Each structure stands twice: as structure tokens, then as C-alpha cells.
Length: 424
Image (cartoon, rainbow, N blue to C red; front, top):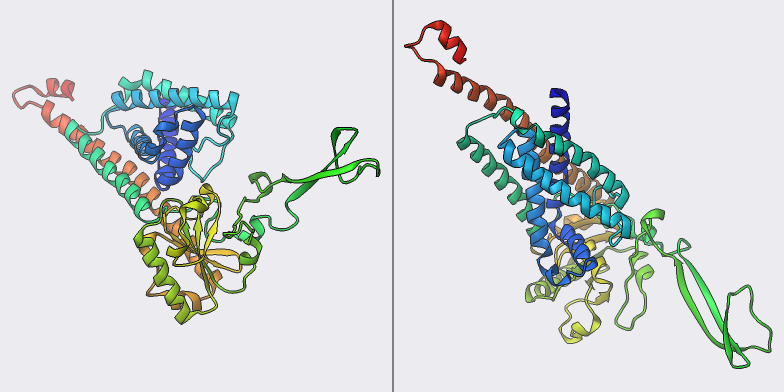
């Protein structure tokens, strides 16, 4: 039973920590997933709070995992872990049956599981959570109440700092479809990867009938209309993504832009454009005219065309859907740098590389991309290693200090040695 307790505690704590961390580093993306769930269950009126809900939920998961793995206030946090996993087991079971949202998002964008895979994962965690809750009184405390609260505050501040950083800047590491190194020209399926099917409608004797291109009727039928539909779109199953850009006239210009041999900059806009975004876009345009006249900059608008005033445009505007604009860059007004269709680097709205733009354009895009990927991976790995190091080391020393303090409090000089041994 002691072995089972240890395994259950480790699995529960580690999964909660990873799940909370991978979502807290991308609060906007997880907020989008929560809004999908809310809309699927007809609770769309709460959707404006989805980002806040995502931050609270992710932080709670992380803290629960830390406390279970570390052994802090086990009576309370084993109960909280059991409540959490019971709720999500029920939710994923319902999702597996009716599939309102295809991907649960339980590990953010890092790991994609089907609803049934998520449900079976939750069943295993539920068994672990039940065991550690039933055995909660068997876990020995590692510190007194004061130091347990101190530990909670330290980890709370740590995870809150990550959330604030990810909101102000960009996710600590980008696991999305448009991360650095993504070749949009290949991934968007702008060529033969997409399949279209044309249906022809003919009429005869007052009735209409549809025909495919291999079964065109004879001349006794009168042509009425033709419809072309996309039958194989970009999707995760074939490694493609739906990335499409239209100009103000409604014409698709995706291939033209992605095939450009010159640097291209996208400014994502999935909320209302602010004067700050317009000012920075104009400043970027003017700077590029001086140092790289062949480079292009576009405002990628995820809102409707009617919401944009052409007279106020600082740069040319292209249109896409809301989710694409948000996924391309999590920051509203954020900047994305492309070279020959490949995403090289990204910046948040308040972090444009004005001072180093000339050096950036002069550098090899592949080297810049490699540095971005390495930086992101090292940052995430350092944070996770720091968390687990703190858990293991602090738990080891804290428990021994706590035991020694108990021994000192129980030893009494007025009692004989035999009685003091019993107290120990």
C-alpha cells in the first residue's frame, strides 16, 4: 500500500503540474478552448470571462499538483484533487459521447488527445486520486502550518508571474499551429494537397438534378448552375492547416504573399484596433521603407470587413477568420515575421524589434528561427526543472527539519531516558 500511495501521489501531482503549466503559459489559447466548451453547452454568455477562468483553473491545477507531490496540507488538497478529477472525468465522458469539442485542451496545445483518450486518462487519475484521498491520513507532514502557507505563497507567486508574462508578452513556448519554423506555404495546403469537387446542376422537364464532372448529361438537359466545394481541407490528420487571406475585394491572396521572396510582416488583429496598434504599424511601415524597401507589412484582420475604416489604415489590410488571427499571434497587434512563407519570429504588441530590425533582416532566417526555438525550449525546461527541483529538495530538507523540531519539542529533561525514547 505504501508503494501504491507513492505511485498514485506522483502520477496525480505530476499530471496536475504539467497540465496546469502547459495551459498557464498560453492563457489566451486556453481561454479560447474554454469558450468553445461554453458555447457547446449553451453557456456562451460567460465566454467573455473565459481567459480569466482559464487562468484560475490552470493555476489551481498547478498548485494542487505541487501540494500533492510535495505533501503540503494533504487532507485538503487530496480532496480538492478528487473533486477536480471527478468533475473532469464526467465532463470528458459526456464529450466522448457527444463530441461537442474535438480536442479537450487538457494539456494546452502541446499534446492533443481525443475525447476518449482523455476520458481513459482521467479514469486512471481518478483511481489514483481516490487512493490518496482514502489514505490521506497516512501521509506525514513535511512542515508546520506556517511554512506550508509560505510554500503555497511562493508557488502561487511563481505561477502568477508566468501567467502575467504570457498575457503581456507571448506564450513561454509556442505549441500552436503557427509556431516559429512553420512553413505556411507547405502547411497551408495551397497547392494540390486540397481537393475540390464540382457539382453541375441541370434541369429537364421541370426538375433539377445534380451531376459530377464524370457524368455530364446529354444535350436534352439544360445547364442551371455549378457549385465547387472543398472536400479535403487542411486538417491535423494530414498535417495541413487552414490559413487563408483575402483582400478587401474578397480575392484570395494567400499564395501570392507566401511565395514572396522578400520579408513579410503580419500584424495580427483579432480585437478592435487601438491607436497604439495603428501608431506602431505606421512606425514599422516607415522604418521598413528606409532599411528594407522590398519588405511588406500587412494588418491581418480577424474581424469583419465592415469594422475597418479604409481611411484610417496605416498598412494594407488582409482578412482572415478570428481564430486564425488569434492563433497566428496571441497578442492583439502582435507582429509575426515571415521569410519565404516560413514563420521566423514573433513579438507582442508592446515589444516590436524597432532597434534591431536592420540586424534581424540581415541575419539568416534559419538561424534566427533556430535561436527562437532553442530559447523557448530552454525557458520551459528550466522552469519545469526549477519547479521539480524545489519540490524534491525543499521536501527533503523541510521534512527533516520538521522531524527534528518535533523531537526537540517532545524531549523533556525532567523525564528519564526511557520515557524520552518513547516520546521520540
